[in-house]
Length: 267
Image (cartoon, rainbow, N blue to C red; front, top):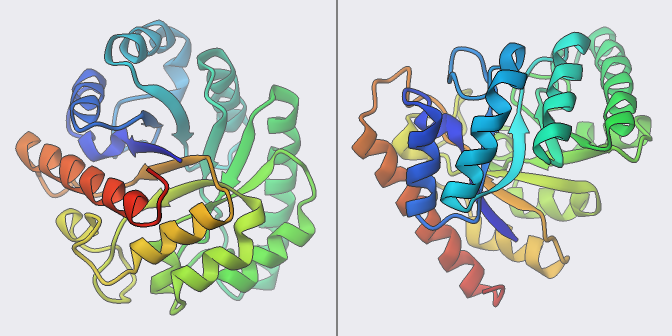
């Protein structure tokens, strides 16, 4: 498994700051945040201008470009994201599932959208990943499995996030085992309680919440998962976290991830 961190953790700061401290914390790679409002890191509308600097940063800090997170399903935006991914050598583009839980009309629209986007991803030689998300059409293991039955493109995969599965009332260790053969990316973070949101950024830090992340990572290892394990901590920009707080979260989470891998014999 490749340990990475989403640059959104450093959303209030420039992209070089994210690269610098993610590298110093010992990660293998980085997931570029293209999330409007949460960061100004990979701005999709300006990706051609930003690509040379991103390549330089990856070389300078010796971080692999593991994935990109771009939440919109707008086909124009997504095509730009796929183009950027191709130019930068990013294999995975994560987007939001969209829709509304337990709404069949919304489900049909989401499946049509994701199917078309997966076909576009296939054309560009990248993988489109979607995760179960609280409140969305795909929000738990049954809806994830249904989506996998309905979207048949080989360029479509699952991004598993234990915090969303936990807040859907499930056991993430059992949930990951049920879909592991289709998991192409993992967003990892902790969570205290089963409320709607993920909680304060500090409480999302691996090891500070209620989720059995040791067991979760053990299932990944047991089934031979070798893809990205990307820390995704949101809310630091909105809540005014200092650079020191963001660095602390990155380092603490990286240590916990490494300990989990060592506990199951993966490192």
